[in-house]
Length: 178
Picture (tube, one colour):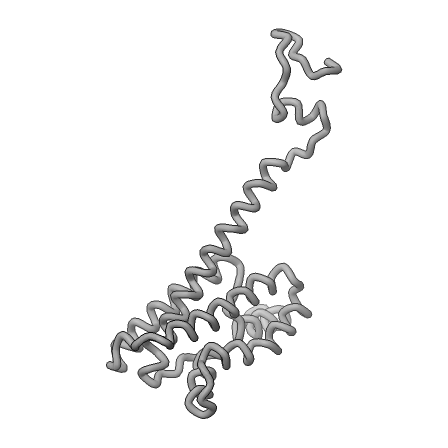
């Protein structure tokens, strides 16, 4: 048994069957599947944030609609400052990200920071194209659908799009029924 041979057939064991004999960690397969889960998570967050950015830049912003939260504040400040909505969104989220790092640590905040960067970048990139509608009702409908779908996918992957999501998460620690 010293060389890992099978007592019955005399053949060598494979690495997976010798795991306890060689003292390899049981989680070698788990580590590999977790890296795939991490990659899938960030692919989903990227797709969702692109949807969110498209909703803002192609439907909400051109129709002068201001949704709630930091996105709506970014749209309003865009009109006052003549700076891209995505850039304003990024700068508004800097103090909130600092709060998130302080309260929740890096693991939560890294995926949220990534989501904020992708939303900002995609909102600025989609703003370079022509709006898909200039009808406010259609803009509200399709912008809401894209923003809601994007936000839902991001939240499903244990991240947020920053802004009021992090603030509410902090408040829920103090006031759980909120």
